[in-house]
Amino acid sequence: MFVIEPDLGLGTPLNGVPPAMNAHDLDPASVLGLVRHLGGRIDRVLVVGCEPQQTDERIGLSEPVQRA
Image (cartoon, rainbow, N blue to C red; front, side, top):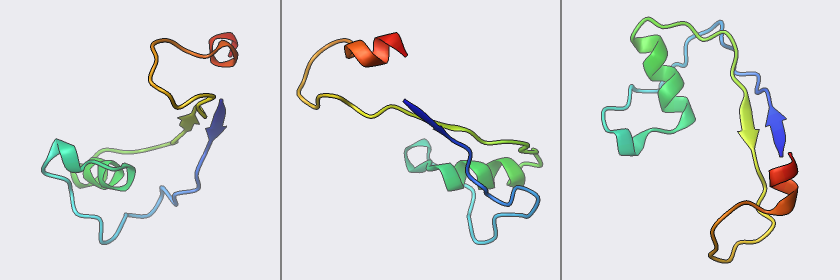
């Protein structure tokens, strides 16, 4: 498990990022652009990631992820 706090220059607009109109097209840059387009404010962005221990098909979390 890890946490990343990207430096997105949140004080400046995301020029060139059109607002997403289809939920299937949403990526992080589109979401942030849409928030600004709608007049919202973003103070901080944290990305929480979890690296898989196994990639085979199964149900449930690995032991390290359960502990984390």
